[in-house]
Image (cartoon, rainbow, N blue to C red; front, side, top):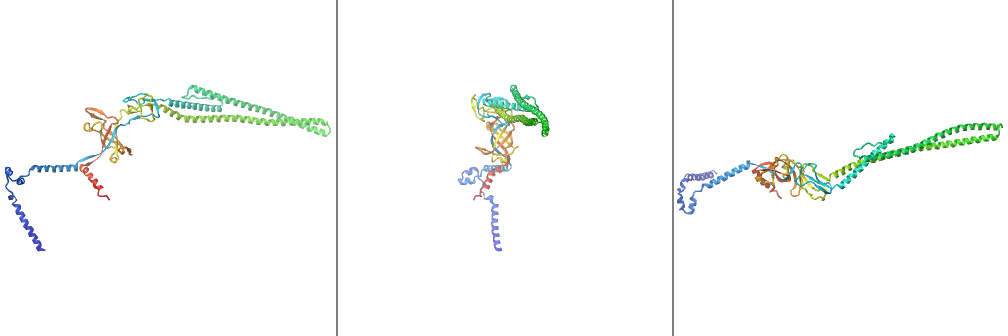
Length: 473
């Protein structure tokens, strides 16, 4: 083993000495340098091998390497903005107000045109209100009649309790002629009631008088009968003792029987009169109770009608008023869709739009579902207007004001979230003139969601590929 190691040492030592000797004389082994004209007379292959390499290629290579190093350093340290791109349009902060009819109708008048300035409450379009006006008038008449009936029944009920004439108070919104007619009707009904009551009072008074007379007569007959009965008893004793003739006793007995019969008859008459008096009094009480019940039923029915007709009048009045379409806000008329007087409009048909005046202009953008996880309120945004190329006229800046919490379905973009961006300014400098944006302009919004390095951006597809690859079955 020791001999093998010594042989290897000797072998490597010999070649090391040879290499050092050759390296020490390397400059002497090169041919002498030749002039440029000498190289031109050498054979082609010697000319190529002996001609020194141009230094330009070395400097180019050094420059490329330096540029690569700088680019790599910038890629590692430089930051790029991460943006979420959304499309949308400019809108007024107060939203464009669409004017629509409540129900189908016929156009009677058109009072505005596109681009016209209007104030809140100005009449824009008037529809034919014949049917709605008739319904409103009919409901109003029914409500007035119900209110008058309520007043009349209430006044009659109070008059029956107090024994005075009915008094109907003044009622706002009721024509004086109708109120006067209702008062006359109340007086007439009360007079009829008093006449019936007076008739029944007279019957009761008559029965009471008959009762008093018959009672007095029964009292007299009872007194007379007692005397006749006593005389008859005395005569019977005398007849038995033969002091008087029998025919005298029989005459007195006949008188006694007649007196008792008359007394019984008058007593029966007294019972009949008392029964008739009770019936008359009950009839009078029943008439008064029935009249009061009728008045209470009528009052309850009138109150029910008033409660039912009050919202009906409000509804028909509102419907009649809505046949006159007015401006909801101050603004400018746009998108006038009807131009023919006498034309028919349908329910909820957009007839025109009023763009609010002096309202702040905002951007309504649709954020894609893939970006919504990074978009937050308060983030800065760059707004590019499609009508004015941003490369020439610049762009606007703004801030994300809010983002919807739920998605909505878009025909082309699929599920999207609505976001509102508040602009820092609502105008662009177009060829030296300040041009204000108007609602409805198409825009593109770039919301800054974060930052990342260039190398991260370049390696992101590679990382995605690596993370999603080499895992298939």
